[in-house]
Image (tube, rainbow, N blue to C red; front, top):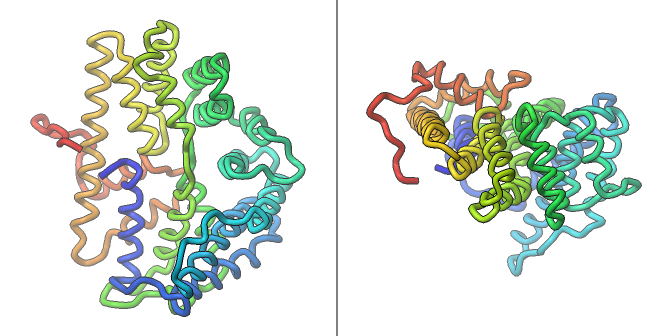
Length: 352
């Protein structure tokens, strides 16, 4: 299982715990109910004074055109509809601007806006404006500097500056669970339609499992090309430069030790190994890779050993806990399961 798909295993578990096995959504069934639900959630949150509720409405407004496109294609099979028209994104962009107006210095609002600006800059804003504001309030976040570096990837001097600034940062935070938490909280204002509620033999119970599964899927469906830019900037050819190697080594260690996501942690370990300049550094990177691989493998195995559908009951409180992100969630879940976070002495990771 890849780091990117690890959290999706939790989402699948959450969906199964509530909904059981069921047929794929149909245009006049679950899919239509889901679309109506999303529109209602947008309606009840778009005008709120809480910037995170407005942000949640923006995230859903970004998804609605995709759902509409999918349902139209399912109703009239044929070629896929292609990219969503630019004007269909206008409601989402307007809501992002509204959320920023309510909280100009909120890192979560700014980060979500920066990710969305990969596709289209909101009206009235200059390219890069939101990213500059994010750097001003969250400059210790390597993710913001790596995103800045990606925006200037054709400028070698900017690449060098971005890596140096990222290396000097305190952590790497992409805040996927914080975004999912904000979205799931906003969804709670609207009752789940019966079509989205439990069916089958799984224990009925927590509709938040459906909400968190959907919310997490929505926020995870965002590309992070900046990480590919970082990897390229720290490839073997680039590492021939001693200064670049030093900065890439620091960035690799930072992501491996202080990323909030398994995705960035895995990239950090890979860069750390690539840039290691001594046997001691290489041994430390390999030890980190071994521990991380163990944690992911043990976590996934624990998820899969769920005959009574109880994992969501155990994981739900962690999902709802403010400030908790993917990496810490895994460690906390292992503690709940009574599994050590360090691998047994004779354990070695398998071949991916």
